[in-house]
Length: 266
Image 1 (cartoon, rainbow, N blue to C red):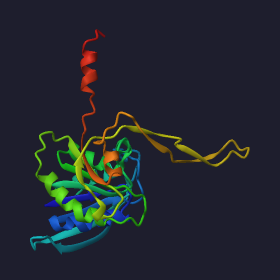
Image 2: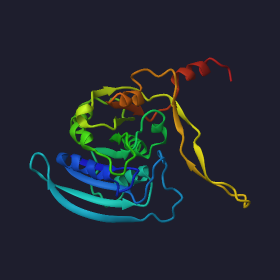
Image 3: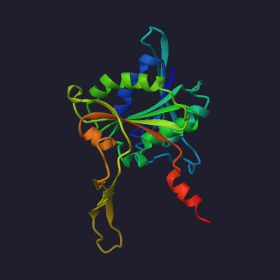
Image 4: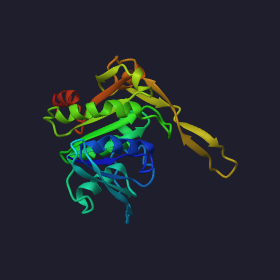
């Protein structure tokens, strides 16, 4: 199997290194990750850059779980996560078309409406556009030195089952979130839906205007969960120590609203 790995936390992040260690048992690994942190980029692509720098970092071999010799190559691209996937699919560096794209392990939850902003999921969506299975993996912890042992224990089984699952709609990609807890405290794995919610108080004043007309802010905020959420909402599942799996689709058409509009004579 040929596996392309990326993320939005950069090639230096602990999470992507943990993911590469997990995935190498399945075959050839190519890591093409952003040179710098690209969190919150969703499916943005690097259209405005006149030059995009790519740096080959390493090339090694390893044995997969069947004892076959496989390659593991690392590269850093000065671009967004979705652009990293595009680079992997269109450049000569990779040399093969991936069977699957796995993005992560993200440092921080990509549950609820955070998934709309996520560069981690943007890369998985880019894979789906190209008819390739895309999986985003996140841990609900922003700690740079997060403990990924629960992901290491449970994700291989999840990955294998997602790989085997029928996917009649090629536009489907998966969002997998792990609670920030020890492996022995995880209650299980549950499928669910993207939770409803929003952030409030999103800008925090850091340096007030000193008379120059300029002030400095930082994006922050508090998440407010909508009252319509049920126990199957992904952020509620992870809050209750379940691993959540949500299938997303590229088609964002609101078909219920479309039926209403079809009844209007425009």
